[in-house]
Image (cartoon, rainbow, N blue to C red):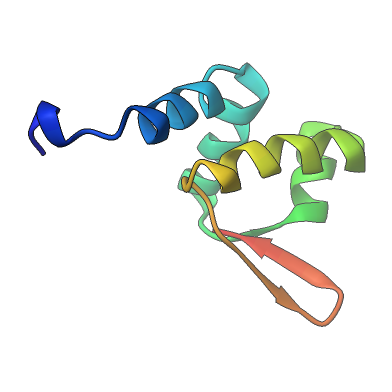
Length: 77
């Protein structure tokens, strides 16, 4: 990708999403283990549901992660 075609807004969203150590820990877990359930992330990282959702929202809005829902379970990949 040439720099002149680089979208600054998208780039800033990605850098903002990766600027927090908690989000980097989430990314590391998903890259290491593959697709994971949100509840598994909460237990492994010892985060509350609110904190986990907030960090995942940053990562999903930047386009780094996606999610899929099966019944009541939400999987992040």
